[in-house]
Amino acid sequence: TGVFHVATPMDFLSKDPENEVIKPTVEGMISIMRACKEAGTVRRIVFTFSAGTVNLEERQRPVYDEESWTDVDFCRRVKMTGW
Image (tube, rainbow, N blue to C red):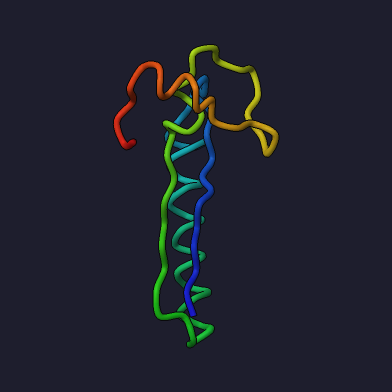
């Protein structure tokens, strides 16, 4: 079996990114790795995320959630890499 971890805290306006973003990200990943080891059945862990999915838009939104989708027309228009 495998585990895909695709979430991470994001706060672009944080006054204390070390404690509000970086430490929770590292501690969360370590916790996931420990749980996978304890399960004894996990062969692979994939950790991925992209700030580009929420940060590279024509018009920034105040909140990003499960209703937020990539503006494909904008990406094609500005010829973003990865296409």
